[in-house]
Image 1: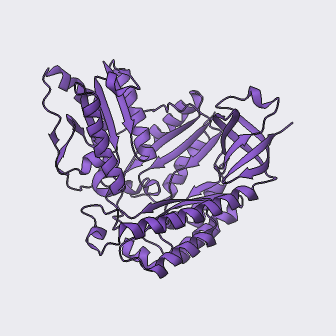
Image 2 (image 1 turned 180 degrees about the vertical axis):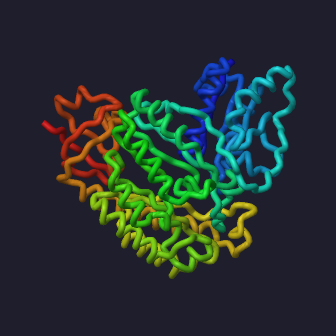
Image 3 (image 1 turned 45 degrees about the vertical axis):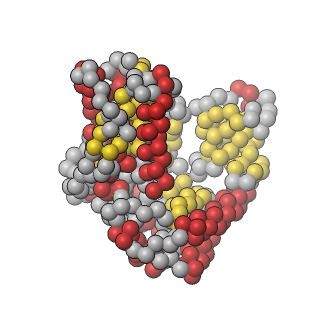
Amino acid sequence: MKVYFLTLGCRVNRYETDAMRRLFLDKGFEVTEDPSQADCCVVNTCSVTGEADRKSHQMLRKMARLNPDAVVVATGCSAELSDGALDCDIVVGNREKTTAADRVLEYFAQQHKPEHTAAHTRPEVTKRDDYHDFGPVLSPEGTRAFMKVEDGCNNFCTYCAIPFARGRVASRDFDSCVEEARFLASSGYKEITVSGIHLCSYGKDRGEDIMSLLKLLEAIDSTPGVERLRLGSLEPMSMTEDFIRGLAGLKHLCPHFHLSLQSGSDTVLKRMNRKYDSSQYAERVSLLRKEFPLMSLTTDIITGFPEETDEEFSETCGFARKMHFAKIHVFPYSEREGTAAASMKQMDMSVRKARAAELIKISDELGAEFASAMKGRQVSVLIEETENGHPAGYTENYVRTRIMQSPQASDIKPGDIVTGMITGSEGTSCVMGLEI
């Protein structure tokens, strides 16, 4: 039997799809890239925004339309949150993804396929007391691997439905994480990105603090074969002096930090139920730059949050420039049913999108400034692919870089780490000359 996978959303979803792929292979399935040829189509959905939710439902309908004879499986956050009919045969909750292959086999064993509708009631939010471990997971990318070490979130920001979809914080077993690091390094991966739904909460369900995450990172950093260690999204108030000093002691940590912001206006941050203000955020950035002077800083910002005034948006734009972000991931605010912000006074979507477009322009300007400032620096690049005939990949501080044409460049392949000097920039990307 053949199975097709479609993944929407975040890195955690990508990781979990890779894990499910292995479980299906272990059960005798063959993976296909053509949904029309599949016996089973698995759609790993996303619900981080209303648009992501809409696309998730659209993709489920598309699978049912493309291949009426296939069993369609809906999993992920949009499937978890759905309180009505879905165009699928099986709904698998986020915390049951390890059972997906068995559920499909049980379905086939019934030798009966109903219509493409499956009611799924939105679950109540309960404290998660366990972590569903997939075991070691290989990414098909072949150069960079993602490692999920935590699930769930306890914060309940007013705009976010993820705690409803993922449940409360649940941390992966320390030894299991280290074992996966060894497995990934021995499998040839040069870089590991440690991620989670709320990464800085690793260990919180066990009564531990942020230093628990540092202890785990130290163990991964010292694993033979690991050449690069990268971190997923981080919370500003978790960036304590002790934690940052500990990060600076890691030999293989890439100096790229994605520090969630959401707004540069203190009044908007308060309405969002974020646990910091702009001055505290700036203080954490200053601490990071003290230890990592060449770091790149990226973030997420929501535009058009309920009741956001022109002045509040202006504050966000000014703060973004002040922080000198290398990239801003911009999202027009999207109502999520069941969240506190959904009951607030909503702004016209045209305003949300116009502000998003303005902030994207600022992001492009800041990204180009950061790339230009890289000129003359000696860096290493993990090659991922060939781009218009040139080997290309990312520097340690996550700047997209292509290698200049030269005799040496013809021998470079994906997975290689090459060293050289940045000789120029092209927008938000760089070009590099090889070390002779």
